Image (cartoon, rainbow, N blue to C red):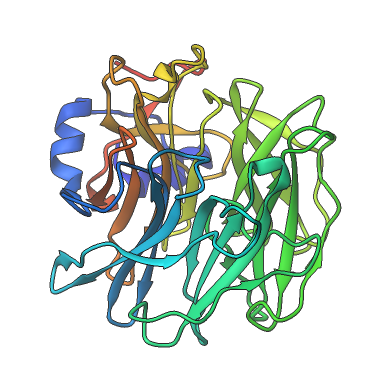
Amino acid sequence: MNLSGTFLLAAGLLAPCFSGSAKSANDSAIVKSEFIFESAPFTSCHASTIAETGSGLVAAWFGGTAERNPDVCIYVARNENGRWTSPMEVANGVGFAINRLPTWNPVLFQPTNGPLLLFFKVGPKPAEWWGMMTTSTNEGKTWSKPQRLPAGILGPIKNKPVQLANGDILCGSSTEGNGGWRVHFERTSNFGKTWISTPPVNDGKAIGAIQPSILFHNDGQLEAVGRTRNENVFQIWSADNGVTWGKMSLLDLPNPDSGTDAVTLHDGLQLLVYNHNVHTGSNNKGRSPLNVAISADGKSWFAALTLEDDPDAPSGFAYPAVIQTSDGMVHITYTWERKRIKHVVIDPKKLSLRPITGGIWPK
């Protein structure tokens, strides 16, 4: 079944008809698969992000000796003439304590007007970090001096914000403190100069959730999906552009306590990148495989691609970031074995979809 039939299927106007193996779908839909760098001034990296500017793609991630170590910095690379520039350090945790602090989870976002935004976190651990922001007026070549966000504002915690019709930038955020894993949403109407925030939208107990991605639906609703401690991806809905949110619930998609990302495609379909696996312990073998699923309504999802599948990879394939560029291609970056950042380009028109029944990825 191709993408054009998904809306009809969701509306009950088309009987499901699926064809093509996972391998043939992967082979036909993947336009490019590459590492952003082959060598770098760090031994470990994680938490990539990607954005499209007027001159091309920009990616960022954090890198150092290991996550949580004080030498972990934010790095950026730009794609020029089809090739990625060498990683460039643009932010670090120097100057916040007697000993420098690690940086975390960069998030790039290019508004329809205004500078390229780069959010990140500084702090000893997620329960104690704070939000930072730097901007670029030349599409990622140089960056302003990073500024700390206002107290209580963390910025987008892992995944890209969205820009609403009125120009507001809506960020999915979350906290990991004593109250449990809780999601909230922050908004700015002036590129980060001032902010307002919702209260937490879940209690952190029934569902422990973090790192939301925000999706648009044709009926005007927003949907947020993301990572949980409950073995499944969460969903939550808003009918007023993110001012208030309904009750959080779980999708029938497994989540091994690992980051996800999602994007609304130009044709209105929803695309989710995630590890379709349950949590299997502290060895992180649950972070394989890495999968792509598609939905018309944000509730029923279909298997599209398997990007990686190696259960013996000790560090797995995780923390995807996904965008659709102006040419219609889907770009995904993700952590590859904590050693490199991989970049995959997909033509969504060539995806073949298969049903996910009972939360089981089809063979």
